[in-house]
Length: 230
Image 1 (cartoon, rainbow, N blue to C red):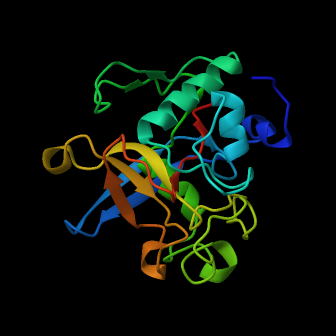
Image 2 (image 1 turned 45 degrees about the vertical axis):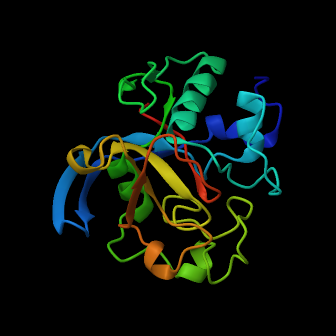
Image 3 (image 1 turned 90 degrees about the vertical axis):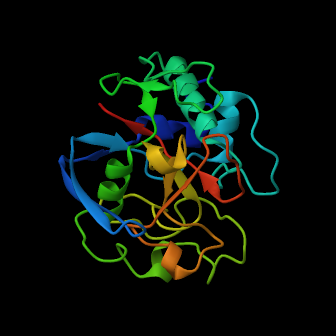
């Protein structure tokens, strides 16, 4: 990748520092909750765009959406491979060791590496809330593209109001893959995604809303966002 070739590629150097803290995660299906300590990390201000994905990978999934929209139709495995490709292009240590298991169960993350990775589920919700405790960090129509205002299409990133930490599209536009396995005893290798998308009603666009699918799953309202441990 030619560093600095497009304005969007500069996102690699514009990740936002997220302070350490803790978050209480909730699962509505099992009615359980658990507290997670979150170390300081960095998170991209918006999801990976189609133009950045194409610049790093060489191509992007076919879509009528514009270059500044979030890349979609990408699997969890596509996301971890992208992170390694971008890390290599930037001369950073790779976070992921990727094997040959089609379910991705042999993917290992080195959390101490300085390269790019997917956020953990705890990191994602902690960053989404940005110190708030309500259903979402602002008025839905102001912060998100969702079923009520999207026209059924993904929109350019960072065109809705950010949260208090400067993060856009944490709610709405596209769902975002996280690192975590959802519940291996029930769903096997299924991975978590968060945030709600352009087709979702308000109930799906909440800071605590959790969904999951197979790590090879691809759909037109699911993308991902970059994180770094340091």
